[in-house]
Amino acid sequence: MLKIAAPSRTVQAVLLMICASATISVLWALLRWGAETMHPVYMVFWRSLFGAVVLVPLFLRSGVAQLRTRRLPLHFLRSACSLFAMVGIFYSIAHVPLAQGMAVNYSAPLFATIGAAILLGETLHRRRIVAVLIGFLGMLVVVRPGFADIHIGILAALMGAVAMAGSLLCVKKLSATEPTQVIIFYGNTLCLPISLALALTYWQPMTWHDAGVMAIIGVVSSTAQWFLAKALSMADAGAVLPLDFLRLVFVTILGVALFHETPDLFTMLGAGLILISVVYIARREANSKAPPIATQAPAE
Image 1 (cartoon, rainbow, N blue to C red):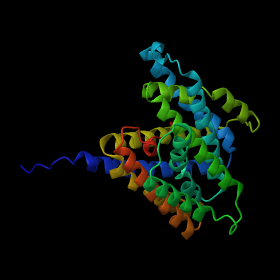
Image 2: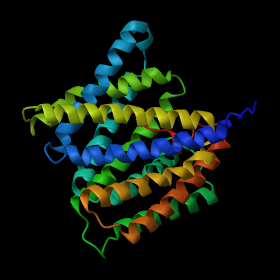
Image 3: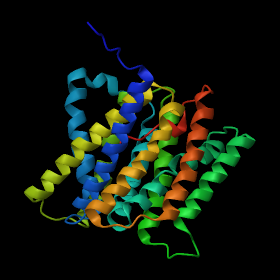
Image 4: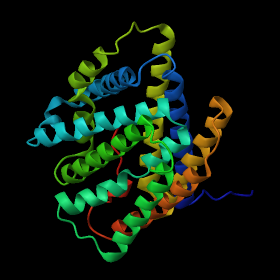
């Protein structure tokens, strides 16, 4: 009887990364759909609340003792960064073409690399500096300041990328002493009051339609995070991170098919430069002892 060999871990990781890219793209399309009836800041609160509701029973079952920490201020800073990253990303998704917002979002690890050098004292060698400069050149190609009007949605995307970089740096610092589940729990719960305060400005009755959209967004978001985490756990970041570019391909297709957006050549070119930069940085960090910034993702 012919036996079919199971695919290698690397092949499985590649397939999981493709699934992650496709799922994240679907998530962005769902967020654009939800923004047709809900304000992005209002959506951020419900996304945060649903995320916390899912986590609380899991930790209550395991015991609250495991949530003890001496680094609560840093957990709060990480949670705040994640919150404002979501605000920026959600707002940009609602107001600019999906592909353009996605391209700017790619730049978060670049900001994190600069932040690690300034705040954590990490050394930036010449090749990494060149990679970062190439990445920021790509971002300039996407944004084109002086050649195109900079929409507030692009500024929101930039804010989201910078805030996400802050979250990545906090996770990098916390991971030296804190278990992953503790980082995830506090990251999803500490800023709920701030999220609610922001959402009150745009409050509206939650319809069954809106509740359904937010529930689907929660499921898809959790699924995307699982695919991504599993892929990165099964292979080196350098092997799977190049496939992250498929996010841009998938989200461009969805933008054309669902929202009649026209693909922008400059956006694709700029995103390519950013991704080349991020992949190179990830490969360099994979050879070091430090947790790789470019492959860590906040639990949004």
